[in-house]
Amino acid sequence: MDDVDRNMYAAERDAASPHTYHRASNEVERVMTAASSSSSSSSGSSHHAANSSAVYRSNTNSNAMNRIPTQNDLERHPTALSRIATQRSQHVNTVGADMKSKSISRASRRPLPAMGAGKPYPPQLPDQEEYVVEFDGPDDPMHAQNWPLRKKILTAAMLGYTTMTSAFTSSIFSAATMIVSREYGVSDEVGLLGTTFFVLGFATGPTLWAPLSELRGRRLPIVLAMFGFSVFSIACATAKDIQTILICRFFSGFFGACPLAVVAAVFSDMFDNRTRGIAVTIFSMAVFTGPLFAPFIGGFIVESHLGWRWTEYLASIMGFVAFALDLIFLEETYPPVILVKKASDLRRRTKNWGIHAKQEEIEVDFRELVTKNFSRPLRLLFTEPIILFLSIYMSFIYGLLYLFLTAYPLVFVGVHGFNLGQSGLTFFGMIAGQLIAGVVVIAQQPWYSRKLAANNGIPVPEWRLPSVMAGGVSFAIGIFWFGWTGFTRDVHWIVPCLSGIFTGFGLMSIFLQALNYLVDAYLMFAASAIAGNTFLRSLCGAGFPLFARQMFDGMGIQYAATLLGCVAVVLAPIPFIFYFYGAKIRERSAWAPTNIGKSAAPPSSTDEGEAPVTEKDDVGFS
Image (cartoon, rainbow, N blue to C red; front, side, top):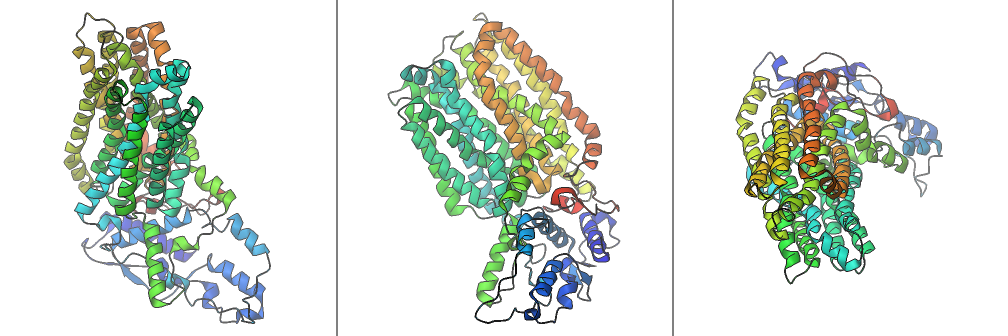
């Protein structure tokens, strides 16, 4: 690390730590930034490039590696500094940005091609950093966090609907399972694969959509995914055999997984630490109320003259509405891609082709793409203890959400004699519990804002966990209640229905704040962290319905619920452990930024070309 890098680090640390200032917070701090440094090669490269292509190539390579300070220091507001640090961190951790990229190393071994038409090589830009576009101060209207509140709310509502559409479709087919099985002459287990394959698509889709959102922005994958989701939903509705249904359900889930993996990251782009909790509340409520609205709608459709195919036609209609809304109204929120568009506009209007954004320096290499981006969610999942154990806990809860799609009909159809539509209405107990949890979390927001203000605007992820602790206790109570009141007709049907208030409250409390916790702890890699979490919990969501009937029929409703309740009790201490020891665990993390306000120098080198993750990654959405 050279002197300029150390100055950059110190400036970014100060921007991340307002309490270290010795002046009013509204004053502008004079610091050294990347724009106040230049390349040693470019500053001294007045040699004509045609003299030697080898010299030109050497200068070009060193241009991105070495910097020396100049006298052009810039005055920057702390928020502007932190956002600059965010863009640089996002750039460094994107495919092709590293000098170890195989595309760069291969290019450096090939002879440098001629300019053509007898032209000599042009001179280097006098100071390449001066041509890099950035946001114009902390109040730049192009930055998504500076959008008007009305625009943010409308965008959040639109993406909430998009997410709910995908989640809704995941469970609506469950009402048609037995009818489809009889129509095509297969077992009930094969019929259940219609739900399982869709949720398997949820598991695999985020490994593509989340890294793509970090490479090309949030809007493109969401629009493409909703179009693919809608097309495959129509294909499923018109399918002529069971194998076509299952294949189309899988790809519908694969495309439908995009909102689950990317929308929370969009909220991270738009909302700061003070308001992100409410935004992720909307996202989580869309994810978990969607599957519970579907059973009664699907049940009444299946028993009507419309038939089971209209469960998929309805999903495709909802999908195309979401696609149209996203295509027309959704604007890009990812800061590096916003700067790419800004640079393109400036180039076109000024005719200065040197103007560019850092993201445009990237040349994607396929091998690096797979290694660094598509595998990142899985690497985070299995190498980060916080993500792994929280994902195990959330996967069990999520698996039970889809297991209830089978367990509730066993109780309310099998024991109490309801039809499929009436049985689906009993899920409103869980929906009510989820709404209560959402209200409780929103009501906690003033308390969280006061703690955030008292800590100079620096979030502590563990503040999110008390709700997860309470939710774990409530969820376990709900499972025991459901099992021991639902196995006999001697207990009125409303009693097991009311157990859903506890399970719904627990489920939503756990997911709301656990997702907030992951976003706060892994800001720069929020999409990949959530994608890894989504992968594991979707596997459980796909597998749990397959053994639900056998378990409840074989063990009995009350004892099967007791087994599940005991597992819930065993997993409940996980948030307690992270509440007390989470900060120490994150200090050892290679991905979670935890050095805010500390004076320790960042690591000077990393493995596999990954950029060092320092505190600058934690302030990108301030």
